Image 1 (cartoon, rainbow, N blue to C red):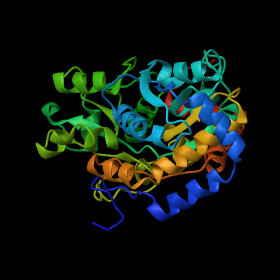
Image 2: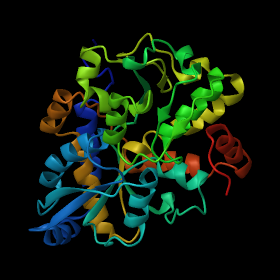
Image 3: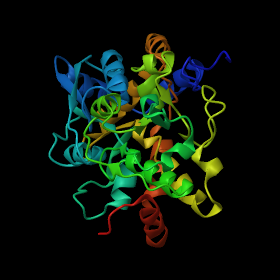
Length: 352
Protein backbone atom coordinates (compact mmCIF):
# COMPACT_ATOMS: atom_id res chain seq x y z
CA UNK A 1 0.00 0.00 0.00
CA UNK A 2 1.30 3.47 -0.87
CA UNK A 3 1.89 5.81 2.05
CA UNK A 4 -0.86 8.18 0.90
CA UNK A 5 -3.56 5.51 0.57
CA UNK A 6 -6.12 4.63 3.20
CA UNK A 7 -6.76 1.01 4.19
CA UNK A 8 -9.90 1.21 2.05
CA UNK A 9 -7.80 1.69 -1.07
CA UNK A 10 -8.68 5.30 -1.88
CA UNK A 11 -6.24 8.22 -1.97
CA UNK A 12 -7.02 11.00 0.50
CA UNK A 13 -5.89 14.54 -0.14
CA UNK A 14 -2.63 15.44 1.55
CA UNK A 15 -2.91 17.44 4.74
CA UNK A 16 -0.67 20.20 3.50
CA UNK A 17 -2.94 20.85 0.53
CA UNK A 18 -5.99 20.88 2.77
CA UNK A 19 -4.36 23.24 5.23
CA UNK A 20 -3.63 25.57 2.32
CA UNK A 21 -7.28 25.38 1.29
CA UNK A 22 -8.36 26.30 4.81
CA UNK A 23 -6.07 29.32 4.81
CA UNK A 24 -7.39 30.44 1.44
CA UNK A 25 -10.97 30.30 2.63
CA UNK A 26 -10.15 32.01 5.91
CA UNK A 27 -8.98 34.99 3.86
CA UNK A 28 -12.35 35.32 2.15
CA UNK A 29 -14.09 37.00 5.06
CA UNK A 30 -13.17 39.91 7.28
CA UNK A 31 -12.80 39.82 11.09
CA UNK A 32 -16.05 41.77 11.34
CA UNK A 33 -17.91 39.23 9.26
CA UNK A 34 -16.39 36.41 11.27
CA UNK A 35 -17.55 38.14 14.48
CA UNK A 36 -21.08 38.38 13.09
CA UNK A 37 -21.02 34.66 12.35
CA UNK A 38 -19.61 33.94 15.80
CA UNK A 39 -22.43 35.89 17.44
CA UNK A 40 -24.98 33.86 15.50
CA UNK A 41 -23.44 30.44 16.10
CA UNK A 42 -22.36 30.86 19.75
CA UNK A 43 -24.48 28.66 22.01
CA UNK A 44 -26.54 27.38 19.06
CA UNK A 45 -27.23 23.83 17.89
CA UNK A 46 -27.10 23.40 14.11
CA UNK A 47 -27.79 20.30 12.05
CA UNK A 48 -26.37 18.32 9.19
CA UNK A 49 -29.28 16.94 7.16
CA UNK A 50 -28.89 13.85 5.01
CA UNK A 51 -31.37 12.40 2.54
CA UNK A 52 -31.21 8.86 3.89
CA UNK A 53 -31.63 7.06 7.20
CA UNK A 54 -29.10 5.53 9.57
CA UNK A 55 -26.87 2.62 8.67
CA UNK A 56 -25.00 3.57 5.49
CA UNK A 57 -21.97 5.49 4.28
CA UNK A 58 -23.74 8.85 4.51
CA UNK A 59 -24.23 8.38 8.22
CA UNK A 60 -20.58 7.34 8.69
CA UNK A 61 -19.38 10.53 7.03
CA UNK A 62 -22.09 12.76 8.48
CA UNK A 63 -21.44 11.81 12.07
CA UNK A 64 -17.68 12.05 11.65
CA UNK A 65 -17.93 15.54 10.11
CA UNK A 66 -20.41 16.61 12.79
CA UNK A 67 -17.95 15.57 15.50
CA UNK A 68 -15.23 17.89 14.17
CA UNK A 69 -16.85 20.73 12.21
CA UNK A 70 -18.11 22.72 15.19
CA UNK A 71 -14.58 23.38 16.45
CA UNK A 72 -13.84 25.32 13.26
CA UNK A 73 -17.05 27.37 13.00
CA UNK A 74 -16.90 30.78 14.73
CA UNK A 75 -18.81 30.49 17.99
CA UNK A 76 -18.26 26.70 18.14
CA UNK A 77 -21.88 25.55 17.85
CA UNK A 78 -23.06 22.09 18.74
CA UNK A 79 -23.83 19.96 15.66
CA UNK A 80 -26.38 17.17 15.38
CA UNK A 81 -27.28 14.83 12.51
CA UNK A 82 -30.79 14.68 11.07
CA UNK A 83 -32.36 12.34 8.51
CA UNK A 84 -34.91 13.01 5.76
CA UNK A 85 -34.94 9.90 3.54
CA UNK A 86 -36.78 9.79 0.25
CA UNK A 87 -36.49 10.26 -3.53
CA UNK A 88 -32.78 9.44 -3.59
CA UNK A 89 -31.94 12.49 -1.48
CA UNK A 90 -34.19 14.94 -3.34
CA UNK A 91 -36.55 15.45 -0.38
CA UNK A 92 -33.67 16.69 1.74
CA UNK A 93 -32.49 18.86 -1.16
CA UNK A 94 -35.95 20.39 -1.49
CA UNK A 95 -36.03 21.13 2.23
CA UNK A 96 -32.66 22.84 2.40
CA UNK A 97 -33.44 24.85 -0.76
CA UNK A 98 -36.79 26.16 0.45
CA UNK A 99 -38.60 25.46 3.74
CA UNK A 100 -35.48 25.13 5.89
CA UNK A 101 -34.30 28.23 7.77
CA UNK A 102 -32.05 30.25 5.46
CA UNK A 103 -29.79 31.32 8.29
CA UNK A 104 -26.94 28.79 8.19
CA UNK A 105 -28.37 26.56 10.89
CA UNK A 106 -28.99 23.61 8.54
CA UNK A 107 -26.35 22.11 6.26
CA UNK A 108 -27.11 19.57 3.55
CA UNK A 109 -25.07 16.39 3.20
CA UNK A 110 -25.81 16.09 -0.49
CA UNK A 111 -26.70 13.14 -2.66
CA UNK A 112 -26.20 13.38 -6.44
CA UNK A 113 -28.78 16.17 -6.63
CA UNK A 114 -27.80 17.66 -10.03
CA UNK A 115 -28.37 14.27 -11.67
CA UNK A 116 -31.79 13.98 -10.06
CA UNK A 117 -32.66 17.54 -11.08
CA UNK A 118 -31.63 16.97 -14.68
CA UNK A 119 -33.17 13.53 -15.03
CA UNK A 120 -36.36 14.09 -13.06
CA UNK A 121 -37.33 17.69 -13.86
CA UNK A 122 -40.98 18.26 -12.99
CA UNK A 123 -41.20 15.17 -10.77
CA UNK A 124 -41.12 16.77 -7.35
CA UNK A 125 -37.72 18.46 -7.71
CA UNK A 126 -38.08 21.96 -6.27
CA UNK A 127 -34.43 22.94 -5.97
CA UNK A 128 -31.89 24.32 -8.44
CA UNK A 129 -28.49 22.78 -7.86
CA UNK A 130 -26.58 25.80 -9.19
CA UNK A 131 -28.24 28.03 -6.60
CA UNK A 132 -27.17 26.00 -3.60
CA UNK A 133 -24.23 27.64 -1.82
CA UNK A 134 -21.74 24.78 -1.92
CA UNK A 135 -19.25 24.42 0.91
CA UNK A 136 -17.24 21.91 -1.13
CA UNK A 137 -16.91 18.15 -1.41
CA UNK A 138 -15.21 15.80 1.02
CA UNK A 139 -14.72 12.86 -1.34
CA UNK A 140 -16.30 11.26 -4.38
CA UNK A 141 -18.62 8.32 -3.95
CA UNK A 142 -17.39 5.07 -5.49
CA UNK A 143 -20.03 2.38 -5.69
CA UNK A 144 -19.70 -1.33 -6.33
CA UNK A 145 -22.13 -4.09 -7.12
CA UNK A 146 -22.19 -6.37 -4.08
CA UNK A 147 -23.72 -9.83 -4.56
CA UNK A 148 -24.43 -12.12 -1.63
CA UNK A 149 -22.53 -15.39 -1.85
CA UNK A 150 -25.54 -17.14 -0.36
CA UNK A 151 -27.11 -16.74 -3.79
CA UNK A 152 -24.27 -18.91 -5.20
CA UNK A 153 -22.91 -16.16 -7.41
CA UNK A 154 -19.25 -15.76 -8.25
CA UNK A 155 -19.07 -13.73 -11.45
CA UNK A 156 -20.86 -11.03 -13.42
CA UNK A 157 -22.40 -13.49 -15.86
CA UNK A 158 -24.34 -15.09 -12.99
CA UNK A 159 -26.61 -12.05 -13.04
CA UNK A 160 -28.28 -13.50 -16.12
CA UNK A 161 -29.77 -16.30 -14.04
CA UNK A 162 -33.57 -16.10 -13.79
CA UNK A 163 -33.79 -16.05 -9.98
CA UNK A 164 -31.62 -12.93 -9.56
CA UNK A 165 -33.25 -9.83 -8.03
CA UNK A 166 -31.39 -6.61 -7.22
CA UNK A 167 -32.50 -3.95 -4.79
CA UNK A 168 -32.19 -0.16 -5.03
CA UNK A 169 -33.37 3.09 -3.57
CA UNK A 170 -35.58 5.29 -5.76
CA UNK A 171 -35.33 5.26 -9.54
CA UNK A 172 -33.60 8.62 -9.30
CA UNK A 173 -30.81 7.06 -7.22
CA UNK A 174 -27.47 5.87 -8.59
CA UNK A 175 -28.08 2.45 -7.02
CA UNK A 176 -30.95 1.96 -9.49
CA UNK A 177 -29.26 3.61 -12.45
CA UNK A 178 -26.01 1.65 -12.21
CA UNK A 179 -27.93 -1.60 -11.81
CA UNK A 180 -29.89 -0.80 -14.98
CA UNK A 181 -26.73 -0.04 -16.95
CA UNK A 182 -25.12 -3.32 -15.85
CA UNK A 183 -28.24 -5.23 -16.89
CA UNK A 184 -28.14 -3.70 -20.36
CA UNK A 185 -24.39 -4.17 -20.68
CA UNK A 186 -24.44 -7.92 -20.04
CA UNK A 187 -27.86 -8.59 -21.57
CA UNK A 188 -29.49 -9.72 -18.31
CA UNK A 189 -33.15 -9.34 -17.41
CA UNK A 190 -33.15 -9.30 -13.60
CA UNK A 191 -35.79 -7.17 -11.89
CA UNK A 192 -34.71 -4.19 -9.76
CA UNK A 193 -36.86 -3.67 -6.69
CA UNK A 194 -36.71 0.05 -5.89
CA UNK A 195 -38.13 1.99 -2.98
CA UNK A 196 -35.75 1.06 -0.17
CA UNK A 197 -35.17 4.23 1.82
CA UNK A 198 -31.82 3.45 3.44
CA UNK A 199 -28.63 1.53 2.84
CA UNK A 200 -29.22 -0.30 6.10
CA UNK A 201 -32.55 -1.63 4.81
CA UNK A 202 -30.89 -2.85 1.62
CA UNK A 203 -28.09 -4.52 3.57
CA UNK A 204 -30.62 -6.35 5.70
CA UNK A 205 -32.67 -7.38 2.66
CA UNK A 206 -29.53 -8.84 1.04
CA UNK A 207 -28.50 -10.72 4.17
CA UNK A 208 -32.01 -12.16 4.51
CA UNK A 209 -32.06 -13.32 0.89
CA UNK A 210 -34.88 -10.98 -0.14
CA UNK A 211 -32.58 -9.57 -2.84
CA UNK A 212 -29.44 -11.01 -4.43
CA UNK A 213 -27.43 -7.81 -4.08
CA UNK A 214 -27.35 -4.07 -4.62
CA UNK A 215 -25.09 -1.21 -5.71
CA UNK A 216 -23.52 0.01 -2.48
CA UNK A 217 -20.92 2.67 -1.71
CA UNK A 218 -17.49 1.13 -1.12
CA UNK A 219 -17.22 3.09 2.15
CA UNK A 220 -20.48 1.50 3.22
CA UNK A 221 -18.67 -1.83 3.14
CA UNK A 222 -15.25 -0.96 4.55
CA UNK A 223 -16.69 1.53 7.03
CA UNK A 224 -19.49 -0.61 8.44
CA UNK A 225 -19.64 -4.10 6.92
CA UNK A 226 -16.03 -5.28 7.01
CA UNK A 227 -17.17 -8.71 8.16
CA UNK A 228 -18.64 -9.25 4.70
CA UNK A 229 -15.13 -9.04 3.27
CA UNK A 230 -13.44 -10.85 6.16
CA UNK A 231 -15.89 -13.77 6.03
CA UNK A 232 -16.05 -13.84 2.22
CA UNK A 233 -19.79 -13.22 2.25
CA UNK A 234 -20.01 -11.06 -0.87
CA UNK A 235 -18.79 -11.02 -4.45
CA UNK A 236 -17.96 -7.70 -6.16
CA UNK A 237 -18.00 -8.27 -9.94
CA UNK A 238 -17.95 -4.61 -11.11
CA UNK A 239 -17.12 -1.16 -9.75
CA UNK A 240 -18.45 2.24 -10.84
CA UNK A 241 -15.46 4.55 -11.12
CA UNK A 242 -13.22 6.05 -13.77
CA UNK A 243 -10.35 3.78 -12.69
CA UNK A 244 -10.04 0.62 -10.61
CA UNK A 245 -9.57 1.19 -6.91
CA UNK A 246 -6.34 -0.06 -5.41
CA UNK A 247 -8.42 -2.21 -3.06
CA UNK A 248 -10.10 -3.99 -6.02
CA UNK A 249 -7.38 -4.30 -8.66
CA UNK A 250 -8.96 -7.35 -10.31
CA UNK A 251 -12.50 -5.98 -10.49
CA UNK A 252 -13.34 -4.20 -13.78
CA UNK A 253 -15.06 -0.84 -13.95
CA UNK A 254 -18.30 -0.53 -15.88
CA UNK A 255 -16.44 1.70 -18.33
CA UNK A 256 -14.13 -1.19 -19.20
CA UNK A 257 -16.91 -3.62 -20.11
CA UNK A 258 -19.44 -1.18 -21.56
CA UNK A 259 -20.03 -0.73 -25.27
CA UNK A 260 -18.61 2.44 -26.88
CA UNK A 261 -22.12 3.80 -27.32
CA UNK A 262 -22.72 4.03 -23.57
CA UNK A 263 -19.36 5.36 -22.39
CA UNK A 264 -20.47 9.00 -22.48
CA UNK A 265 -23.57 8.10 -20.45
CA UNK A 266 -21.41 6.42 -17.80
CA UNK A 267 -19.00 9.35 -17.69
CA UNK A 268 -21.95 11.73 -17.26
CA UNK A 269 -23.18 9.78 -14.24
CA UNK A 270 -19.67 9.62 -12.81
CA UNK A 271 -19.52 13.43 -12.93
CA UNK A 272 -22.16 13.40 -10.21
CA UNK A 273 -20.19 11.24 -7.79
CA UNK A 274 -18.33 14.09 -6.03
CA UNK A 275 -21.64 15.91 -5.52
CA UNK A 276 -22.87 12.79 -3.73
CA UNK A 277 -20.12 13.54 -1.20
CA UNK A 278 -20.60 17.31 -0.95
CA UNK A 279 -22.13 19.80 1.50
CA UNK A 280 -24.21 22.90 0.86
CA UNK A 281 -26.50 25.46 2.45
CA UNK A 282 -29.59 27.10 1.03
CA UNK A 283 -29.55 30.01 -1.43
CA UNK A 284 -30.73 32.55 1.15
CA UNK A 285 -28.04 32.04 3.78
CA UNK A 286 -26.16 35.34 4.43
CA UNK A 287 -22.77 35.67 2.75
CA UNK A 288 -20.77 36.07 5.95
CA UNK A 289 -22.12 32.80 7.35
CA UNK A 290 -21.51 31.00 4.06
CA UNK A 291 -17.90 32.24 4.10
CA UNK A 292 -17.49 31.11 7.70
CA UNK A 293 -18.91 27.66 6.96
CA UNK A 294 -16.73 27.27 3.86
CA UNK A 295 -13.63 28.14 5.87
CA UNK A 296 -14.69 25.75 8.63
CA UNK A 297 -15.35 22.95 6.15
CA UNK A 298 -11.90 23.35 4.58
CA UNK A 299 -10.26 23.54 8.01
CA UNK A 300 -12.08 20.42 9.18
CA UNK A 301 -10.91 18.42 6.19
CA UNK A 302 -7.35 19.53 6.92
CA UNK A 303 -7.58 18.82 10.65
CA UNK A 304 -5.12 16.04 11.67
CA UNK A 305 -7.60 14.69 14.22
CA UNK A 306 -10.32 14.45 11.56
CA UNK A 307 -7.99 12.76 9.06
CA UNK A 308 -6.77 10.31 11.69
CA UNK A 309 -10.35 9.33 12.49
CA UNK A 310 -11.14 8.94 8.79
CA UNK A 311 -8.16 6.62 8.42
CA UNK A 312 -9.24 4.54 11.43
CA UNK A 313 -12.73 4.23 9.95
CA UNK A 314 -11.43 3.37 6.45
CA UNK A 315 -13.18 6.46 5.05
CA UNK A 316 -11.27 8.29 2.33
CA UNK A 317 -11.11 12.08 2.07
CA UNK A 318 -10.58 14.09 -1.11
CA UNK A 319 -11.32 17.80 -0.68
CA UNK A 320 -12.79 19.93 -3.49
CA UNK A 321 -13.33 23.64 -2.95
CA UNK A 322 -16.65 25.39 -3.70
CA UNK A 323 -15.58 26.51 -7.18
CA UNK A 324 -14.54 22.99 -8.19
CA UNK A 325 -17.77 21.60 -6.78
CA UNK A 326 -19.94 24.14 -8.62
CA UNK A 327 -18.09 23.40 -11.88
CA UNK A 328 -19.07 19.73 -11.55
CA UNK A 329 -22.66 20.75 -10.82
CA UNK A 330 -22.76 22.88 -13.96
CA UNK A 331 -21.28 20.11 -16.09
CA UNK A 332 -24.44 18.15 -15.34
CA UNK A 333 -27.07 20.89 -15.24
CA UNK A 334 -25.93 22.41 -18.55
CA UNK A 335 -26.13 19.15 -20.50
CA UNK A 336 -28.31 19.32 -23.61
CA UNK A 337 -31.90 17.97 -23.50
CA UNK A 338 -31.05 15.53 -26.30
CA UNK A 339 -28.18 14.01 -24.36
CA UNK A 340 -30.19 13.85 -21.14
CA UNK A 341 -32.92 11.96 -23.04
CA UNK A 342 -30.29 9.37 -24.03
CA UNK A 343 -29.11 9.04 -20.45
CA UNK A 344 -32.64 8.66 -19.13
CA UNK A 345 -33.38 5.91 -21.59
CA UNK A 346 -30.14 4.10 -20.72
CA UNK A 347 -30.77 4.11 -16.96
CA UNK A 348 -34.48 3.34 -17.07
CA UNK A 349 -35.61 6.73 -15.80
CA UNK A 350 -39.37 7.29 -16.19
CA UNK A 351 -40.56 9.63 -18.90
CA UNK A 352 -41.97 12.95 -17.75
